[in-house]
Amino acid sequence: MSVTRPVAAQFEAYNAHDIDAFLACFADDFKGYRMPAETPSTRGKPALRDFYINNRFNNPALRAELISRTVLGNKVFDHEFIHGLSPSPLESIAVFEINDGLISTAWFYFP
Image (cartoon, rainbow, N blue to C red; front, side, top):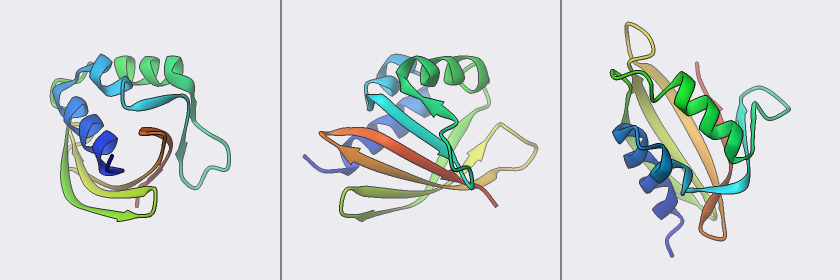
């Protein structure tokens, strides 16, 4: 299985605002970091579900635009523009660590 598979699937589900398809891409013990944080901002699928239902997928203008995707070992680096969270698109880099075919950890970088 390609390490990009769960990343591509979560990207598609994100843009469709499909919470079930989105969560299916993540490990149960997922950890998400908003850098430069040293501790996770999100731990586990229940917290991930709660955050995306209440802070992202409830926004009809939300969508991500993929600028580039790079793979290094079991890490996938997505350079994106996020639309709908502010008047102009937010640039971000998301780094996804893939283990056993699921996203186990993600680091999100913003300017």
